[in-house]
Length: 303
Length: 245
Image 1: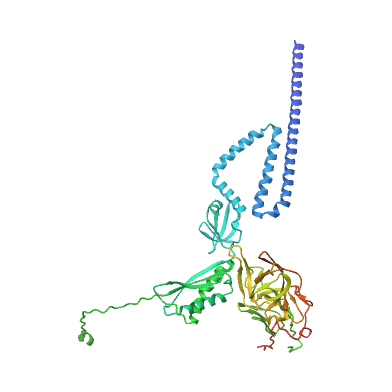
Image 2: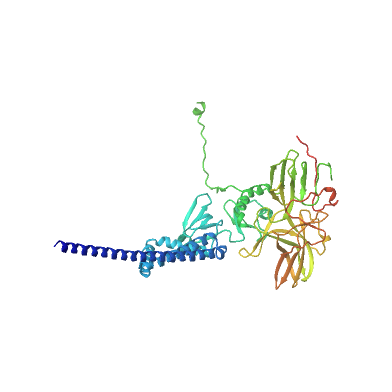
């Protein structure tokens, strides 16, 4: 009996050992397989990384010199990290991860994220369009979406403008793209124009001549197109003379300020008067006599 | 012209301004007081600096594309009378402005103009080119030019079809000015071509006359008044001894 028990115990121990050995062998096989897969994944990702780095180097050499930094940087990042993402996806394949399923899932996620961030995407697309079209550059004085100032930065999502009075305004590119853009340096010259009123007693020819000489002497009033001064309106209190000259856009504001400041002095020196608003009163005489009686209040005077 | 051995005045550009010197060319004035004050003026304003006596102050002629602002590399010379050209390669002569770069040591203090500054648009408002404007006579011989004080001599050769030129424009920003023994300044020869009614002008790297020296903007050896020619028509040098307080 005891022998039988012993035999049974020996058999069960052997079975256990063989089971243990079998499971260890299987585990080792699994580990070998996992190690192989990990190694394969690392190799795939490393190859992807190498390809991405190579493409980035090629881009740096050939594309970077042809594009402004604010256009090139996002492009380089998109290409590099896009390739890394694809390499990562390929590296997951040995583990049985279905790439197409993941991409489909990613696509769905992209659509969901896209809907959620519609405005950001719209700005991004508008930013790319603006960078391609280049209606203005950094440093240009512009008017965009009711904001006037100097362009400080153009990124893929927004445009920053420093307004004439100092504050920085960030405008989403979507709004910039859909707005009317006025660029003040894309032209070769800008017209300075203002109106000055002279007294009705003024010799108009003399006034026009004085003003034309003033414009012709000014260094920033271009020779061609020639400056102009002409009677614009016979107004209530003055003869209004319109003064026009073309100036380089870079000095347009300085020219306008200088001309408007000095014109009074020029007219004063020439003896030409700039009148105040005035009203002539004409009393029409009546045939009926109006009796006027002046009463002297002696009592009040004495007081 | 020389009043003292310690004060050396140059007739030929670049003009060295010693203490106690007032230098005039056209409307440009560079004045250096004995107490160290330097003042450079033209009709549009002045720039001042206080310098040590050993520091070099000089005026250096440069192409007229800096004053009053650096808005264009072009100079347009409008002729007083329109010029009929055969296009046979003949050389004509005219005058163009230059600016003076005033150096204090190796630092540019200011750029001034010996003549009035005007600009013009050559072409229309959208496609045209902004250029520094100057009105000058055009002649067939160098000797027929009037006193070029404050301006540099320009020789231009016209090839191609016959045409009537109202003026010539050229890119002067990179041009090297030349100075001759008499102190006259020159732009390089401008090559003008007239083809199918289109006039193109290009500045060459050749001086228009022999015996001139290029005015490079690097530091130059001093040339004394005694070494310079006795007559100086391009520069009207006024020298006065300033009294220190």
